[in-house]
Image 1 (cartoon, rainbow, N blue to C red):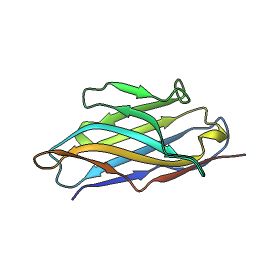
Image 2 (spheres, rainbow, N blue to C red):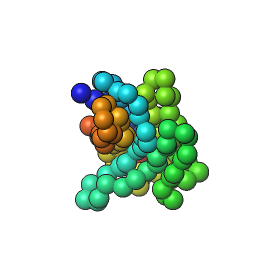
Image 3 (spheres, rainbow, N blue to C red):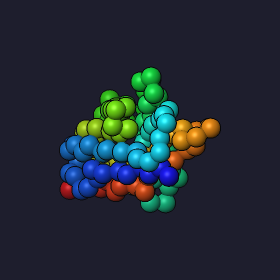
Length: 119
C-alpha cells in the first residue's frame, strides 16, 4: 500500500513564502512523475507543477518565476517552494505521483494541505 503525505501548508501574508513537502511511502519499486495540484473553493483542481524522474519540469503559467518544484529520489519526496505568494494562490494543495509497486504504475494522490495567503 502506498501513501503520499503532504506537509508545510499554513497561513502566510502576501509576498511571503512557504515550502510544501510530500513523502511517498509503502511498497515502492519506482516513482515516475511527481507533481503538485491545487483546488480553490468553487474551482476545479488545476496543475501547479510537475517533475519527471529525469528532472524535466513543467509549471502553470500563473506560478512561473515564483514557485519551484524539486524532488529527492532517495527520500521519495517532492517539494514545492512557493515565493512571492498572492491571495489567489490560496487553495488546498495536493501531491500526485505515478508509482510502480508491481507490474504497472498507478496514480496516487495525497490528502491535501491548506495554503492560505491573507493579510
